[in-house]
Length: 95
Image (cartoon, rainbow, N blue to C red):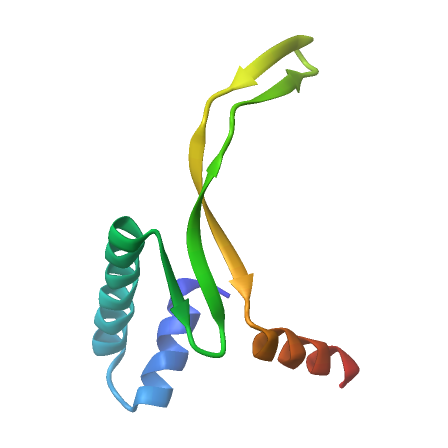
């Protein structure tokens, strides 16, 4: 699904113009980024929890150059789905 398709669906469900739906989506995304930056995690009811996890330094291998590398420490975004959302996805497969 593209962003434009998502905006179209939001506009239909919110009964507003696509410009308003696009602004709503942008503001929501900005808010999520701000919360992650300050809190390092947040939960969305019935969907799951987003959190920032520190990935430790690790070894890697580049097969094209045949070189071993040490990748640096970095922060990555982690998502853990709620049990409600997992159950919903399981039900989709059965249909």
